[in-house]
Length: 269
Image 1: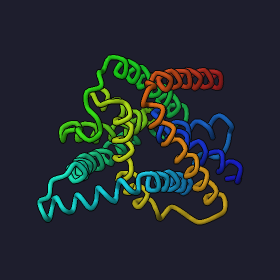
Image 2 (image 1 turned 180 degrees about the vertical axis):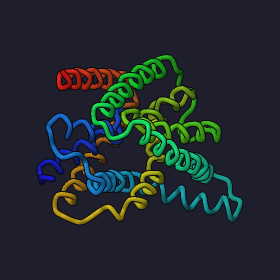
Image 3 (image 1 turned 90 degrees about the vertical axis):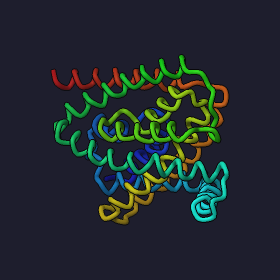
Image 4 (image 1 turned 135 degrees about the horizontal axis):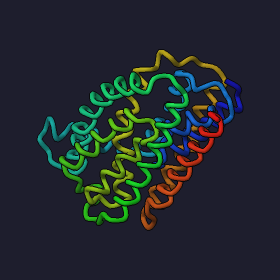
């Protein structure tokens, strides 16, 4: 892959991984639209390493507190909000990881390697999830903040990540934030909890596929681009959701989905 393509895809990954608009959709659609080589497994791992670093850097202090408090809760039986949240994240991540692997294999067999089918699924997922996100966000009240998310809410939000693994275009952040809003979690807290859930499951995915990664300049630049943009986007979204809604992202998803369908029809005929 050309260096400029790696940088562009790194920027795309950084922009879309944390916004509820589906990074997997965009990373597949960009090469398809511009007739580039499709994303290799090595590049996919590299781009996720970049956004994983963004999560680590941005939430480093939060995770230090969570791990320390989680240890104290398990060993010393000391109760704290951080300790509770640590084990809630663990409880939400394990079933999500197992279910994601199962659904991903089933989805791969059903969708197959036909690029037109893949694009149709991505377009449909973008549009349907965009509509659901808009309706759920508009109708749901904000009653629960990050510190008061319950075990039940954590597990339901966590398990929803598996749906994103099964259907490219759904978006891991999109489905978790949508479910969180449906469970009456306030917007900023829904985004933060989604980000906290992203770190262990992304780390597991990167470690699992690390053998596919090979160092070269294009991959390094892709990592750097996704890292820098990822940090900026995390900060932006958390600040934006203090007053803003998910409406703009829902509209964007629908527009992009319709655009993909239009291009697909044009190319087929």
